[in-house]
Length: 37
Image (cartoon, rainbow, N blue to C red; front, side, top):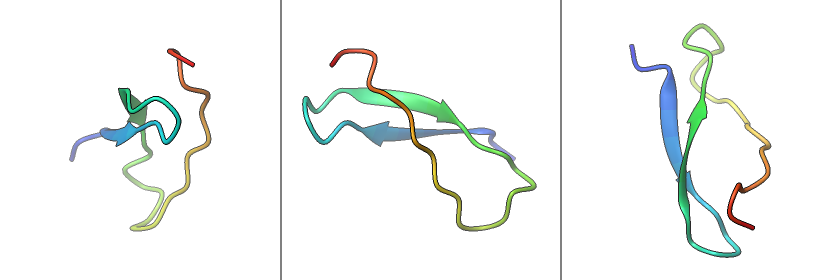
């Protein structure tokens, strides 16, 4: 299973890759600052 996911910053539109926990269930929430903003 892939342990990374991509998301898009709401402010600048930059795509970033975040780590996810494959054993964390089907719904997870990640809070991370955008490296570009």
